[in-house]
Amino acid sequence: MTIGGSSIADELATIVPWEDRAPRITLAERTARLDKARALTEAAGADALLIGAGASLRYFAGIPWGATERLVALLLPVKGQPILICPRFEQGSLEAAVEIDADLRLWEEDESPYALVAVAVRKLLLDPQLPYGMATGLAATGLELGDGASVIDACRMIKSPAEIALLRQAKAMTLEVQRRAARILHPGIAASAVIRFIDEAHRAIGSSGSYFCAVQFGRATAFPHGLPGDQLLEEDQLVLIDTGCQVEGYHSDITRTYAFGQVGDEARATWDIEHEAQAAAFAAVQPGIPCETIDAAARVVLEKAGLGPDYRLPGLPHRTGHGIGLSIHEPAYLVRGDRTPLAPGMCFSNEPMIVVPDRFGIRLEDHFHVTETGAAWFTEPQPSIDRPFG
Image (tube, rainbow, N blue to C red; front, top):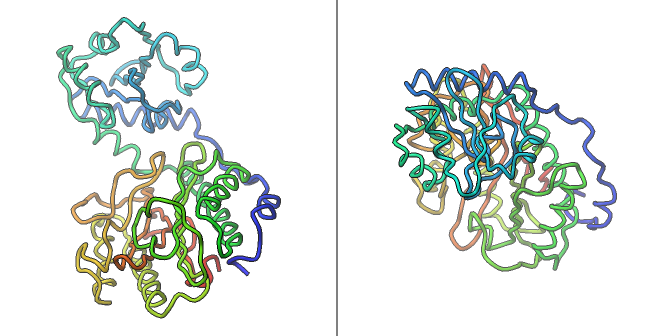
């Protein structure tokens, strides 16, 4: 039995830490990333690239820090040593976290960190995730500023074999947690109890816990991000669970929608259409074609079934997929208007959700990476509405 029949205690007791762990990103790979970013920055006519705290700082320097009101950044000149700009009181923590060779430029609380940048360069490309207030502080120094998105995206969109291995591990771990979550379901269980279990199971299997978790029953499945309040599961309802974890910062993000009991012919027929649309999006993947083509392939299936068109409901209210890596949503996107050519190493979600307003929704989400000849799944799609895990 794959749905129900077990308990939270039994499932947690039988989880073992993940054994086949993917290796961490090496210094050699981070050095190659820096070299690529330097070349792209120079080609853009700039002196340096400034990378703020967040996913891109982790990508280039291995520092897993989030952004705060204080400037912590990597200044990458096209020539010379990378420079880390950081509050002086954080020096010890920074030195313990950094995984590249870099010079330190430290600032006290009553000093301007932007002056440390201005003395080193004239034309600077900025991380697009840098807060607006920091960008204005840099502009006030007289620097010529430009958008660094094209440099950062060109590096981060194409995943290396090591990154793909980390992503594969994260997704495999979450799929196992999803399997176990289905087994603990019973009438009256609260969505909040399932969410707590999923977080504990993610921790037990060897991640840092759930990066996010949505558990929706019945009518709530018609809202892509759910409804406020806690729900209790009832017989003959749809269950939608969307969750993920991180492995060395790399994300999983898997959704399963399935029947808890009897859910009616319309829901079953809609599940079949969703399954076909997800398969059509996957089959359309080829290197060189624009991202928007994949979104269009899913929508052809939906429109043939009388759904949509475009974003009209009942139908698909959002894009078919998003890039994934150190950010759970990152460029490029499988959506009309994104003409980024697909290339080997790109990684995407595939989730052409169908919403029947105020009644139910079906979302199946798995991820793939682009290969030389098409696409390869990280996780195999759900086989049926009654058998979410085969």
